[in-house]
Length: 153
Image (cartoon, rainbow, N blue to C red; front, side, top):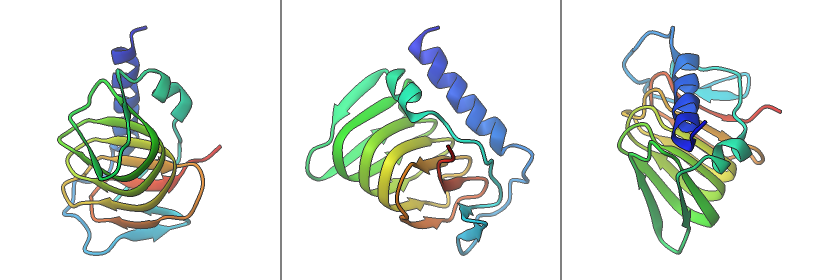
C-alpha cells in the first residue's frame, strides 16, 4: 500500500470518527468532558503515531521560529523540538516529537505528537483531531466536531 493511500485512510478514519455529530456553530468556550477537550463531538480511539509518521510523504526539521504546514495531504513528519507550529489549509496530517505552541486552522487536520505545551483549534478547524502521548497541555478548542486529547494506549 502506498504512503499516500495510508495517509488518506488515516484522514478518512478521523473524519468518520467525527461524523454523526451535528455541524453546529463553534462553541464560545472549549468543552471538557471526562478529560477529553472537544468541540461538539469526538471519538475515543487513538492513532498509531509511529505508523502514521513512517508513511509521511515529507520530513522537515524544525528550526527556530514558526513552522507552517499547509494542505499536506500526503503527510508531514516534523523532526526535533518544534517551538511553534501552525497547521492551515485543509486535510493536513502532521506528526511530531514535541511541539511548544500548536495552532490548527482549516478543515480536517490530524496532528499526532509525543507532547505539546499549548493547543489552539480555531473556529474554522472543524473536523480536526489533535493527540499527544504525554503531558497536560493548555487547550483552547473553538472548533465544532474536533477533538484535542491525550492518546489512549
